[in-house]
Amino acid sequence: MKSVIICADDFAQSSAIDEAIIQLIQKNRLTATSCMVLSPRWFESAQRLTADIRQKADIGLHLDFTHFGDAHRHTALIARSLFRNLPPKAIKHCIEVQLNRFEKALGTAPDYVDGHQHVHQLPQIREALLDVLTTRYSQQLPWIRIARPPVNDGLKAKVISSLGASALEKAAKRMDFRCSGDLLGVYDFSGTSVDYKNALNFWLSNVDSTLGTPVLMCHPATAKMEGELNDPIYFARLIEYSVLDSDAMDGLLQKIKLSRSPQDC
Image: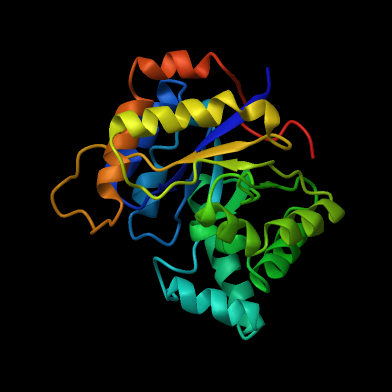
């Protein structure tokens, strides 16, 4: 039975997201969560990542260049990175700031690093990220999530992978980082709870054909609190949470062995 990491993205983006992720970790439905440390909520949210939660799940940095802080438009960031037109000192500074905020709140390095909208794999950013991580954490490197969906997962999956997954993986492995395998969970954030359950069943039923230790990413949230930030995928988040929190999830999890981190490099 192959190991799978089930990872919820966007911790600290909103209280509704935080609540869903904490509940699902407590119920052993998630084994990792990725934190948006530039969020104004971060230091408040981090208090929920107790010792008990950290025993159940890896806590990672969701590297952010496109949402909070001095954010770039995603398409503009991609274009500038592909033309290698981003200022290297600014990239490194942004990475360092986020690692500092992570450590200040939790007192440790992140267990792993990935990227909001997969920005950690873009040219310039991936090189700076690996350099900073190697310098800061040479004694115990965090693992790296590779955004490489299976080849048959559709156009969106192909675009995500094409923006640097292989280059990041090769560079990271040369520098002795552990890397996750295929990335599951890519879809267009549309459909019903039945559609999402069927998608989960498909992803988890086919893990034996994936490379390495796959990560199934998800984006759950509970009911929206008054005053939450606008969220374009909010209704998809509700659907994901309803399925991940349901009794049906127990049956889906019988298909796999849960893991917090990659079992091989």
